[in-house]
Length: 498
Image (cartoon, rainbow, N blue to C red; front, side, top):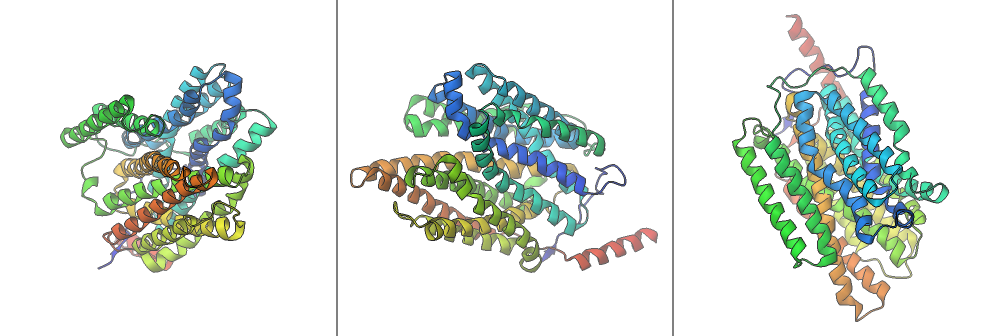
């Protein structure tokens, strides 16, 4: 039996000033998300220059990247709930100020400590921007067709920004210096702050008493941070090392504490009503799996291009541009397909398409590869599947959520993607490293590396098959066609008049 994607159960709050088009909200949200995702990859190509200029150790280089990801992933739920309680505009503006200011201090850093601390703080701002940018869209778009279009653009931005970060980081580092990979955030940050301050209304979304679940926030932030640290160090120090075991043990205790707080708190970070929504729970599980494959695919494809084929970092980024473009195409095509197939069937199809592309990548030779058949072909298949998945998962996960809980639902989806990416990449990196070591005695170094990458690609294919099977249990939501939405609007107007 099919269910219909109805408008939110409570009247949608006014988000935008009168007489301004909804495209303003979409533009503000997507540019903010672009900046957040861009900074997960843009610093990578600048690390060698950073190390030389600031006399950084290898460990300090790692924290330039992971520090940002830890605070971003750890504070998403808190930021999402703060948006529901204090208003999405207020939290969005706070996030933009913090993100832009930290970009400035990081770019001006004269020693590694200031740079690393700035990246941690930058992640705080990114955590505030990510769920509020999605909530601004879901709460402002009551017309389902417009909502699907806006969510498609928001989802596509994630894939586009990741590859743009690699390209832009290479250009800025080569033509200017490493500081500009951080300074580049300042002009759009100031412009977005001004646009949001003037265009968005300050109305609060929630009607409940204003109180944050600080114990739960502390547990989940430190827990995800400890988990991220333990998993990132496991590939360096080994799973049996003391610091890894202590970090993972602390993560288990803290995450268990978070669950306990959520079950007993009067105002938990995750409203208990959301836990009764099958579409949200399964959507988050699938989003977590998508995070694993999304991060791992870009990471291992980039390594394959550079370490196996010998591409420069900039050339590798350029080689991945077609993947980004096809993800965008897949996102736009999915807007049409979702009307015919429904989100559930599109998730199933997208998962299987990505799995096929990953299986093809697992079969690539060490050398000499043919770009069209060994790289472009499988990556385009992966890209089209990712384009199908991003919109359909977001649409399914937020379809039954009340506006006052939109931030919490958005935060859950983003946390699932970030956590899946962090955990999955750490685990797959360790597995690939062990596979490479095992194969090193029987083959040359390049073949051993490619063997490790192939194992990672095969695991990603399996993850996507499992995600498609899980999607079978999703409710069969039917996305309304434009003519159906118009008819429903006429009926609502007639009922209001009577």
